[in-house]
Image (tube, rainbow, N blue to C red; front, top):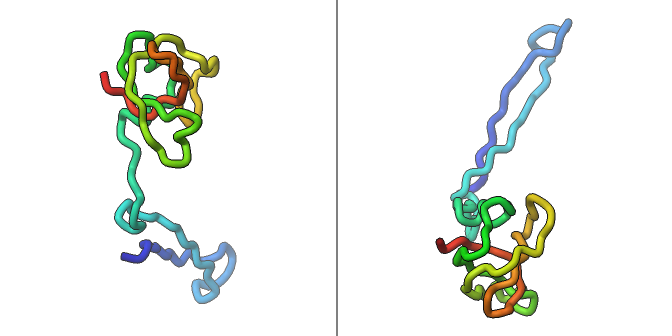
Length: 107
């Protein structure tokens, strides 16, 4: 399904309605693009440091697994990201010693 477009015709100030300016807005829908996924709450929470606590079970992506996206599950030992948010996920160290960015919070 192609993206949806909405067009509105708005008259320019001080001119006749025949001379108009076309205003378009692009509003893609999730189904418009194959493979497009909306982020779920778990993914959004994984980008916020305040949602990650030691002892929490999470799934992370290791640096070496970034191209494949393979996830490793474990329990958070340390939080390594100091900023309150990070667009790629909060970096943590698991109890196993593995270091990566949180992609999913299991519970």
